Amino acid sequence: MNLALVSRYYWREGAIPNIARTSVKYLRKKGVQCLVFASDVRRRDVNAGVIWVRIPLFKIKILDIAGILCGLTLIPKMMYLHKRKRIDGIICHDTSIFYGIYLLSKICRIPVVVFFHGWIYNPVREIAYRPSVSLMYKLNAR
Image 1 (cartoon, helix red, strand yellow):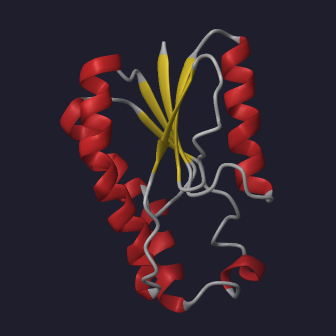
Image 2 (cartoon, rainbow, N blue to C red):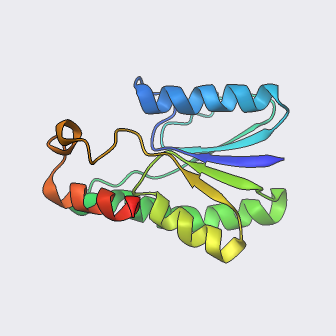
């Protein structure tokens, strides 16, 4: 089985990258080959059963368009790898990148799961985001 894991960051400190790393570690123990798509993968990252793919990060802040663009740039990369490796599922740890991944999942008929980290409907979390980003995350949740 081949699973693609998508996260903006994989090696950075923080809860989301830590969950991504733990997921890959667990999946590898179960014999699942992982394709890790992240912005901070390095050439020295060599691990049997893991394919590393660097994704671009954009610096556009409005509505988190950077995440949407990143997701759209992943479509050709994932389609290419899907033809060669047959991706059986996608795990996405980014709600903005999910827009592109969702489109890819419909084109290639690959099941996708998105993880919502930090629920946006929590009033404490909602004030941490700009109103435009908050609106976009709420649209994702629907």
